[in-house]
Length: 81
Image (cartoon, rainbow, N blue to C red; front, side, top):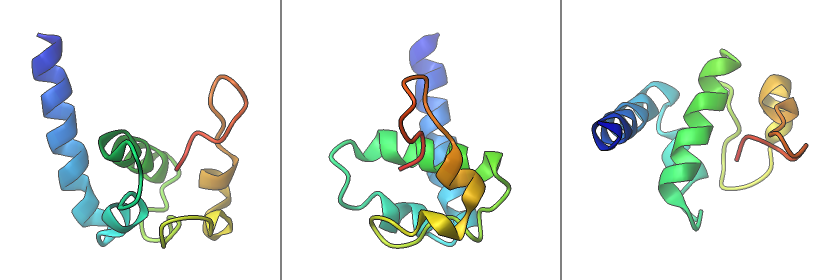
């Protein structure tokens, strides 16, 4: 059951990339953990309602969306790639 949910989530997160103009593919293109990067990029962009303004390029530019920039994980680090 969890495998089905995980694979379904990945399909949805990959499809969501279309809604952000492909920025997620660019952002995560050099990531060592590509699937995880796509997952969190999409989660952050959708949660912040800024899919059109999510950070572009492969690194940096987080000031383009302060909500995205300021999201933290449980350890206090940046949640969004």
